[in-house]
Amino acid sequence: MGLSVTNGSWVMFIDPDDAVNPDIIESLLKAAHDDIDIICCCCQVLLDQETVEDHFYKGDRLFSTFEDKQDLWGQLLDYKYKHPNFDYAAIAVPWAKLYRASMLKDNDIQFDKTLVRMQDNVFNTYAFYYARKIAYIDKPLYRYRYEHISHYMTEYAERLQMIYSNLQKAREKSFDDLGLFSSDFLSRKYYEEAIYSLVCTCKYGIFIKQHSKEDQEKMFFQFIDQPCFERVLSNYREHTNIVPYFFRHSMVCLYYQLIVRKQVKLLYLIGRLRALLGR
Image 1 (cartoon, rainbow, N blue to C red):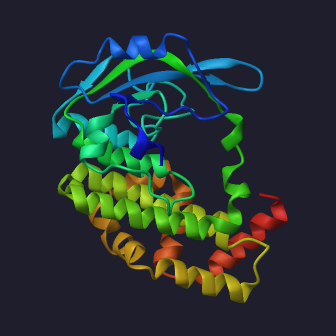
Image 2 (image 1 turned 30 degrees about the horizontal axis):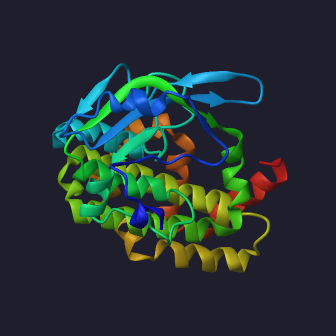
């Protein structure tokens, strides 16, 4: 709504429980050349007991070509990608940025109202594509309060199916719209992230003690039989080196192997075991 009525040259988003350095806009505007449409910075992370700096990349960066921007989309899909330090946020967030208003309006880039979470992720998929150049200033000018997402999986457990279904549909559409599947690197990151979404939904939203065994089976097939996830399961092996990925994320790949083989009974038993162990 706000984007449609803004009349300034630049747009900045600030979460209501966060803060910014007094000079953030002045500092970012120093990089505002005629062909730069997005200017980003990194952040200070406000924890319960301390404040730490989270640098999204090592040093200042300028992204202009499709090849350059793959580092942006790569971190958008995998928050650890090219992240130089222990990370609490990533370049995918809408805050800590100035967007050229005309770029957003001319390309009709808006937040997807069907998404409960991660609207910013899809929003920036389009914004990074249509921006002529994107400048990253490696200064922590934004103050991000971390604790409000610390219990994300448990807080949204009952809605994870809906959250990840809508997210996957929107992300698939953005990749199709922008031709991002043409990049082998981005395809691999896309399918890895999608598998992670599948695993999280099964682990934290479907195969949990709140649902009966019969409901779990019904929910599972309703979820994975959607076209967006059928595409993931049929294409994942083509784009991901499964052996090294298994050793890096063994539990993810164990769940994946059970999901792709539709081993509902084993998934149910793992869920019961996790409940007994209090995990």
